[in-house]
Length: 70
Image (cartoon, rainbow, N blue to C red; front, side, top):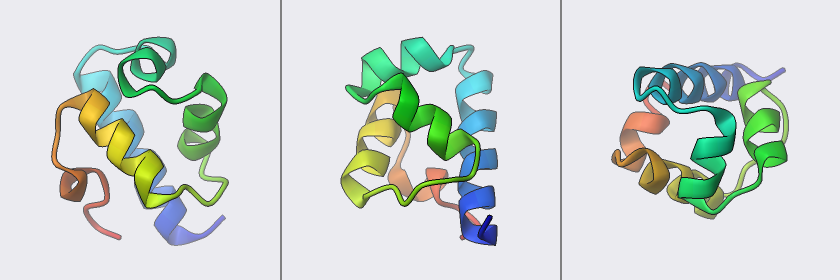
C-alpha cells in the first residue's frame, strides 16, 4: 500500500466518521459506489480526481482537505 493512499484512506475515514456518515450514506451523497469508497478507505485502487472531487462534494468539504498530507 502506497503511503499516499494510506493518508487518503485515513483522511476519508476520519472525515466521513466526523460527519456521522456511513459508507452507504456517503455513496448516495457523492454519487459513487460503496465499492469505490470501500476500496479507497482500505488504501487500495487508483482513484481518479473526479472521484475524489465527488467524495469531497458529498462530504461538503474542499478537495484539498481530503487530500491533505499527500
